[in-house]
Amino acid sequence: MVAKRSLGLAALAAGGAIAVGYRRRKAVRPGPAEWFAVTVDCGPEELSGANRPDALGRLTEHHEVRITPAPGGRGTEIAVHAADGKVREEVRALKQFLETGEVLRVEGQPEGHRTVLGRAAVPVSRQLMRRGVR
Amino acid sequence: MKALCWTGVNEVAVEEVPDPRILNRQDVIVRVTASSTCGSDLHLLDGYVPTMMAGDVIGHEFLGEVVETGPDVRDRRVGERVVVCSIIGCGRCRNCRAEMWSLCDNSNPDPGFLETLNGHATAGIFGYSHAMGGFAGSHAEYVRVPYGDVNAFPVPEGVADANAVFASDAVPTGWMGADIAGIRPGDVVAVWGCGGVGQMAARAAFLLGAERVIAIDRLPERLEMTARHTGAETLDYEEVDVLDALKEMTGGRGPDVCVEAVGMEGHGTGAQYAYDRVKQAVRLQTDRGLPLRQAIHACRKGGTVSVLGVYLGFVDKFPMGAVMNKGLTLRSGQQHGQRYIPMLLERMAAGEVDASHLLTHPMALEDAPRGYEMFKNKEDGCVRAVFTP
Image (tube, rainbow over all chains, first blue to last red; front, side, top):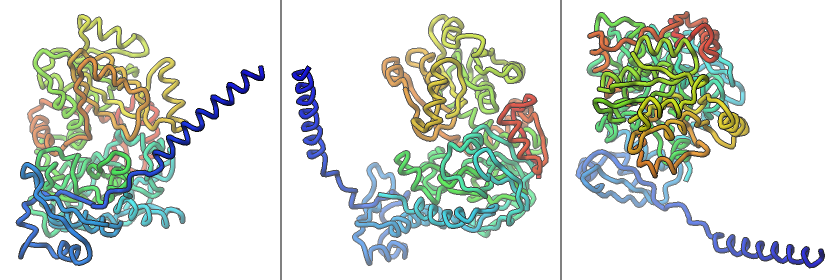
């Protein structure tokens, strides 16, 4: 009985060691991507020189921005380095503006009675969803 | 104005809310004349779609009259009678231009939730939670329609409101289920679910060349309605073993195309259904999948399974082995309604497509809470309650 218990403990310990070893090896998680990228349905020439939209100009003042033609002539990739939530929102807005001519709004629509919690939560959750997490 | 608001799980109420206004230059404002309940609303009511907030105006399948246009609207005119696609497209991104409107890049201004859940965000939808853009819905006197030129469609004279309202969602969704499945002349098509979408998928399957359509449900009045209005044969899954019956009816091959028009709260029988209900109730899976599993199991080798029912997240025990080993093609998506609506309105005008029988319960908007109760519980043979403000 004792021998059996020891055997069981040894097995548990071995299992634990394997688990710890596995965790150690996996401890370093891959980091998030450093670039936030969108593809815009236009040619690269529409994003440079005199055609460059003001919003893109402003982005390039504070961030490294990479503009490359998408494979197969399927638009242009705009990638921004070290984009935080606010910048991600700006990049999404830039794509919308370039493709549709305006940035879609949902603030100011009809809504019914919001609870106290809801009144606080709606703008916060909206901002979280607008920016997305990385 | 008056509008129907979601106020909590299984609770809706008619409230006084501000009128909508033009928020973008391509918006139109529509005075709603008919707004339908839809099976997918039940997922909101039942609390399975997160990001609903008390006070959200619901409703997405509607018809009305244009009463105001934004300065950049070119084609829509005040006074036009229009049906509006429930899924919002921008008309300019690569997906819209490829006629895959529900994959629009630009119509969901708050894409973060769906990006985290699904990898990418899809189009905005009227009255369908903040994850889908947080747009105010159509169970209201007025609704704001973004990108009015591409999302609102003039209804031909002679097409009654009771028919045209379903060109917003049920008819194009059903049509798409048959269309993307690539039905060929002589095919046998099985359709799970005899609600509005399933019935329209059955009708579309015949119009696209199917030789036999077999519709599956458990409610006698819906089975009878489907047989009468679409010409489909029907199976009551509480009376027969669907898999056995389909094999028998197809000479052992199985249907060439299986259309699933049920979604994440699918009903069923036996131990598998009980298992799904428990796992969904304790949130170990977000979506129940019995009819979907059945469709995959039934489909003939090399056939196509077309999924129209709304799923949000994860289905447990997904039979990937059957998909892989039988070489099945899986097609799916929210409806690309803008691709089909003009053609469907023409077919309605020509008498080839008629969905007006779906409207079993016309009601005033004030009675919408009762309408949803009837619709949800399928009382009094309710297939669709449609509200008029």
